[in-house]
Structure formats: structure tokens, C-alpha cells
Image (cartoon, rainbow, N blue to C red; front, side, top):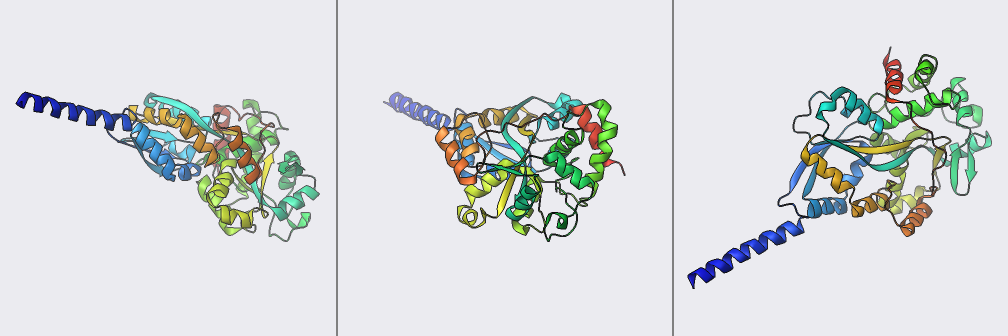
Length: 356
């Protein structure tokens, strides 16, 4: 009888362990992963639905610190850091070049094109000047090169019929700290290079021109998330034209439907022709970090990344696509795209920008 009771007790213990393990996606206990993320992904990691899937399915709890994408891959100390989650392959290339021995694995998990955030009044004035073209419900910065020439010639907002103070420019984050600013530096340099990809031989010609344009911006934020929040909160006078990621406005609209209804006719999202894809890449520095890559490639997570946070992924439903496209007014496809200059060219451009 005693043997039978012991046998039943052992069976119950095994069953409980099995249930806990299965309910935790095959992981016996929760693991807290520590790492750095780009500010535009903060809303994603704060999403309770995302947290629930990560915890219940993969046993992951993410403890993150917000940092600029370029900044995070240049830190000197990665003790107890499981992952980095910058917003581009460029950041990964910098990390490989400077600290490649620390890399366990890397994978691109989300995409978002670089866009220019603006306001209806500004977009209308730019359309009148033939810098912007409307096709369907989407606004395109179709004469990007012409606008940049206007910026170089110090054209003012008053010159295009607006009462805004100062000279026309496009606000971005610090290219040597934040990815959106870094990608804009690359895109701007391509535009200054007559819409041709900047090569090593072009750097000394194009770099100083790009620096001259960006130097006129004064203080530059280190975070794409901070810059977007400032754009929304402070309005047109503070940020007539602001570089950001497409997903930021999509996420804002989906998270704040009541506010979106009030402001959707005032805000404007301009798609530069050409633009550049931002490829959000996980850099694993530990075996636990590799588990985050696996989790973020999960079909359920990928679906929520698009439907709740506006990151374009390869695993979305057409119904969800159309609903989001209709709600926010974004194009179904991004066709006018050019690559970022190679990593060594970008680093040369960054060095020129950093020079006093």
C-alpha cells in the first residue's frame, strides 16, 4: 500500500512538471533577458499581449534599456547583456567590425521604411511647390532632390508661403548615436550624390555637404522614440519635417484611436522617393539572447508586430493589412527604395559629421 502511494505521488509530481513545462513553451523556468533596444520598439516590449506570449510560450521576460542603435553597438562593457536590438544592419556591421568575437547570432526580425513626418499645412505648401505628389491616399516626397537643393540654398518657410520661423530643414536624430538619423545621413548623401549610391570616392565631396545641412539643426536627440514623441506633442512649429519610422505613426494610431480621430487630418506622412528600409536586427550576445531571436520569429509575435505596432513582417494576413492601411493611410507596397551605402562608407560619412 505504501509503495502504491509513493508511486502515485511520483506520478503527480511528474505530471505537474510536464504541465508547467508545456505551458511554458518547453522551458522549465522563466528567464530574464537583459539588453538594449531602439526607442521605437519600446511600445512593442511594453505591450502586455507581447509580454504574455514571450513568457508563456518561451519563458522569456525582457528587461531592456533604451539606447540609440549606433550608440549601443559601441559600448565598451557588455557584462550581463544578453542582446542588442538596433534598427539596422548597419549597426550590426559596426558591431561585427569592432566586437565580432562577442556575437553569438544575429537575425533581422522586423522592417520599417524611413519616412518624413509632417503636417497638412506643410505638406500642402510642399505640394504647391511640386516637391510632394499625392497618389491615392499617400503623399510622396517625389522631388526629394529638389527639396534638398532648396535646403542647401537656405530657402525659408516663408519662401513657400508658410508663417513658420527660419529656414527649411528636415529634423533627424544624431547620426552617430541613433539609427534613424544614421539612415537619413546615408539617404541624404545618396540624394546629394545625384541619387547614386555613395561610394568611397564620393565621400569627400558629399560628406561635407551633408554635414553642412545637418549642422544647421543644432541639438540632435539620441532617440527616434523621443523625436517622434516631440513631433506629436509639440506640433508643427517645433517639427515641420521630422525623420522617423513608418511604424511609429501606425503604432500611435492603433494605440490611441480617440486621439487619432482628432489629429489624423492634421498629421502627414511623406514617403521619400527614394527611401531606405530600416531592418530591425537582434544581436545575441549569449545563448539566452539567441532564444529571443527564436521568440521574435514566432508567427504569432510577427503577426502582432504588424497588427499592433506597425512593423512590416512577412507573416501577416491580407485582412489585417487592408485594415491597417485603411486606418492610417499608408501604402500597401514601398517601391521606390535604394540601399544604404556600405558600412565603411557610412563610417567615413559619420566621421566627417563628427568633425568640428
